[in-house]
Image (cartoon, rainbow, N blue to C red; front, top):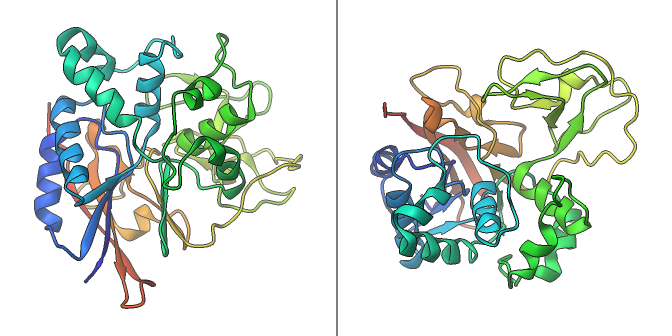
Amino acid sequence: MKGYDVIGDVHGCYDELCELLDKIGQSSERKLIFVGDLIDRGPKQKECVALVRELVEQHRALCIMGNHEYNAILKRLNLRLKKDLFSLPFCDFVNTDRDFYYDSIEWMKTLPLWLDLPSLGVVHACWNSRLMRILASYLDSEHRVKDDYFFIASAKNSSGCTVTKIADAAEIILKGTELSLPEGEYFVDKDGKSRKEIRYKWWQSVTEETRYCDIALSVGDAEITDKKLGQIKGWIGKEPPKLIVVGHYWLRSRSPDNVSLEDAAFSDKVFCSDFSCVKQGRLAAIRVDLNSDDSVGGVSVESVASREF
């Protein structure tokens, strides 16, 4: 059946990617889509970039920009000075394989920020039509960055704060929405860092009775306060108009042996493809089947286990 196979954050897990591609098979009626974050953390980033780039150039796949590609570009342009807190950062290639590093950065600049297909939208972290309109003048008709001025306009300042509408929009599209917890509240994230902000469920509508724990996203087993939001002015939560697939959120499947559709479903229309492969999770593909009229006929999930490295 024709359709799309949307593959989650690879993060240098080349062997798992090859296994997943073998498992789902290759068909001229189906298009592979990568949600970005090919790089950082994992052991075979060079191989992952080379493979995905080849698939894209052969018109067998599409790939969008993830926040890790975006950050790598900012680093190359000296617009991001923050030190990476994870192991095996992509920027280390500037010391070990400069030609690959510089060439890959230029390729990453050509990746669209999102895909707006007739029956499917794909974005790394957050689908928001209003923010996409803010970014539109910096992008071409396929949502690719026109020139480096976009990165200059979207970079944070020296204090790590977004200071323009472009910066705010890029931050949310690529990294998700965040909300400050009440004073004195925090949680510890997957990297052991204490955080006073939570990512929240951007597709969900809320009321004044909604609690912080109701809308917290990607916090693992951390306990989030059950205090009510109270002030909801300016809330951007809204169910998207069509099926959306994202990555980014470091989910864990209920079973170590597979990723179920229930695991991947944020809502009836929003599905996540990132199941923490580089953190001993699974590499997953959201399989979107299309009917003859290109409407969505069904959604399923295929995955493979992470390998030790």
